[in-house]
Image (cartoon, rainbow, N blue to C red; front, side):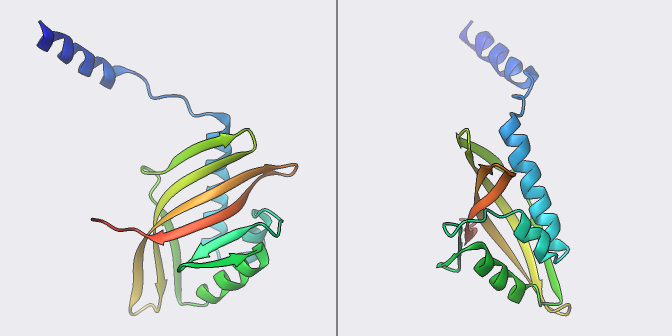
Length: 151
């Protein structure tokens, strides 16, 4: 009897509809999609427009803190001088964690391809994006990046 109950519960779990996406999840996902599209287009003005305009903005990259959105744009621009630059988010593994009505964290695994056309580097990254709701809409408030450890 217990086996039948277990099988029924498993079957129901597969039949149950997925949880509806919240307004915050949609807004954060949309913000990040625009952020990635602007990066891949090498449109630093569009990237900058999606960032929180605050001295508290921080990008942690290669174990270093880059404070302020303009410093992030400066650093990103240096990377984008490569022949190849492409950010490919793994949307299946992404998760939005709503922290408050005005903040959320996007956990976003991705592949970054950059370098020369002949020998580009392909790096698996884990990115945590702090998103903040401002009077002008959701903005990227901080980026915490690290290489993904597959083990």
